[in-house]
Length: 216
Image (tube, rainbow, N blue to C red):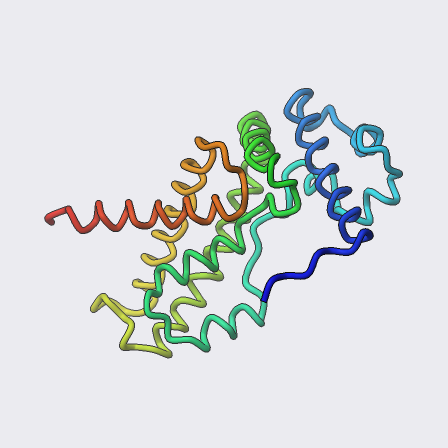
């Protein structure tokens, strides 16, 4: 069933959130993160500070987007309820949902905003560290979930090693896939979520082809 069109109020809400992240990332990329204030962002967007904090919880979120997150209880239950034909693809899809930080940005601006955020993190080691810490937290949660999955469906194990070892390997490949997919996505014109997801799928196929072609 096709999704219904958002209401005018919802459309305005999405546009405001997109504008906050667009202007915040542009200002920080131009002036430096520490030289931009919430007041600066509000002035560019044309909103009050009260409205700003109704949409985002901090300047960091406005500039860099929501950080990578861990699976919700519902996402964990859904993942464990299915014996996936391809556990790696399923894991990549879940990791994609958890790690994507540009969903609130207008589709035509997503690649631009992501490039700005990379520039901002390169200039500020503390911000880069925060992002890495968020990814590590997400990865640890995915390893725990994958280990639980392999214990629940032992027939899906590929390695003779313990489930914890295989889970770590699967999550490492999934995160590598997302990183490669992001790089492919940034090199093309289509900045949509669908294009990003397709690039991650292509990246997984590329990695699989390389692994299959190697003789150990």
